[in-house]
Length: 181
Image 1 (cartoon, rainbow, N blue to C red):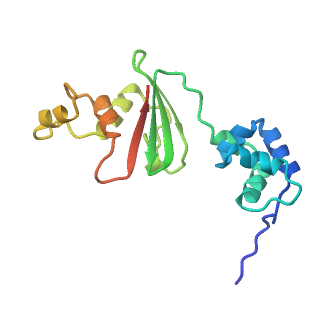
Image 2 (image 1 turned 135 degrees about the horizontal axis):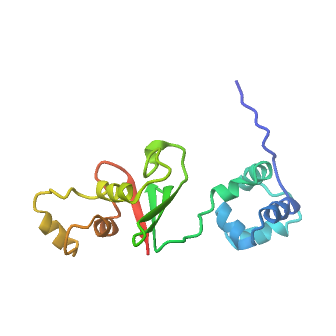
Image 3 (image 1 turned 30 degrees about the vertical axis):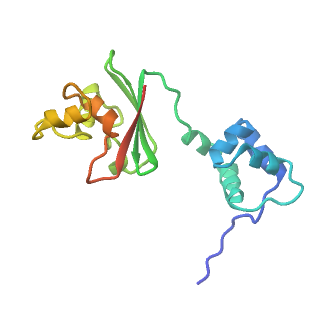
């Protein structure tokens, strides 16, 4: 059985401009969103011929579901620390932390609970956050821990500092953490 798709075969410059306008994005922002360069968007928007390729399906999806752009937009950072929790190269959870106020705010970018930093917990406490950090580094009871800490140039056992040095990488999985201060 042959599958048939309703995907348009091409788009045009007017439709690219229209979608970008609906999304209220600059050419640079739109280029970043769809994974191309700004000159490529400029070329599409000035094209006098049909535009073909993967952008045709992206334009069709955005035309039908313009809200998807917001679903892929990182929230503005409002705390001193941001952690980005990844599975391979897929951003799964953004964790914003205010250590002084002991507040944690998250946004999940996957529905798969196994890939979320806090599973089904949508409102983790600061204690949950501390447990999460500790789960992403070697145990406090590790044999020869002081030697490992010295190797990482960390003066004492601090899960945040360990995760910052190691990326929270564990041998048995493909998750990692990027910390922004």
